[in-house]
Image 1 (cartoon, rainbow, N blue to C red):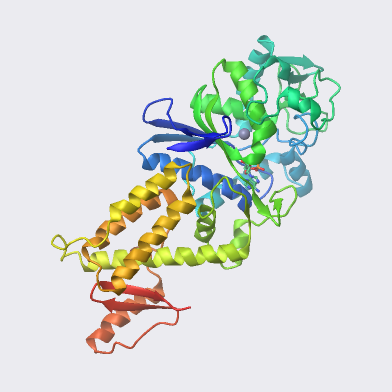
Image 2 (cartoon, rainbow, N blue to C red):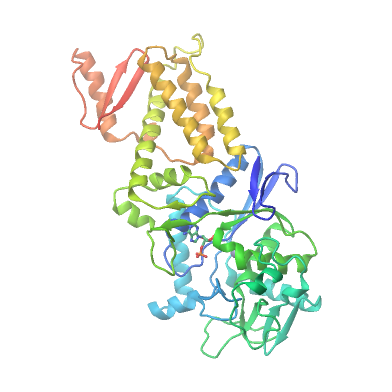
Length: 471
Ligand code: AMP
Ligand code: ZN
């Protein structure tokens, strides 16, 4: 598999650190608001990577953190030393404790992931439970001369790390001519970032430390949780593109200075989901959540299909029209698979003697080639649509061999272990179709072949059942 590495700006062959294994760290939610579909796009991309690694036989270990402290409102601009804690701010607004806020929105996040059929990470560490580990790393950075303490605040000295800027291109040289950041009076260099902040009296989230009663910076938490659960060097680190700078740049600096080893082999970032040309975000409020999507009559799987239909590194502007199209495409897949399941059963007895009518493994091979090319899910899906098209044509011409039902189904299932689409399997055939099948059988007995359904009709052809859409 080749995958685009933000660090090297090219597609690279995946070579695991440990043969047969793959480790992944995904920057998870800051739990101060409902998960929106932009967040889902990033998590789904990480899920696709994980699923494809598993499809290829790798044993994957995936960690996704929960940010419940340290992420400040100004973190995209400043260096962790100004702004309010996002969770504490939401707590004030909703008149709850930060813990209540964090647990509530963490539960929402987990529910959304479940509905989207995103495989749960092996562990979801919370930042607040790892402050001890963060302090340990900060102590080491101070000891090694990569950090300094002033007035109970500890900053990372960016000039102490020659590679600063290697991920984002924001080297100190480039930053000099770029936008200036607000300078904190205790900092030596405006781009030094906060590892630990001395908490003002009114600040609720704070811990004892060797430097002050304070709280950790946002970046240090991911270094702490990543090294804790996955070791010093990991294969993949994923996030949305907004994470590249300053978050991931800072993670590299502090982790590599702490361990003296390479932190991450492959840095992967999903492009943003946009809303009217702007990044969908919690802070701007220009967002849709999964319940909004469902309220409009779409399913989580429609959304999944929409996201898989565009490449994770291309921008996507959210629209209801494209979701409608995704819904139709999913319906096509649904009917196809349902037919395979019904007919697989129907022709179970007759198998073993008939010739194959389709080159099914050829499709799976092309699917693999598409996925090998930087997880090209739109191409992989189009190969599936092509496969369905050929199946339908052969069926219509009376040239489809029932022998192929079972084979098509097993190849589809393998491919779908990567797409992760939850379909209406035989066990949950929609009532309307179930009734149709029963009616159809009854009608056949009564020699009445004219019955049909309003939306979908079921025909009994010599090659087996055929579900037809009526627009
Ligand atoms: P947050 O909860 O804001 O920390 O974001 C959680 C994850 O979602 C991070 O990896 C972000 O990069 C990602 N993310 C946030 N907004 C978007 C968006 N509009 N499109 C894609 N990913 C996003
Ligand atoms: Zn992170």
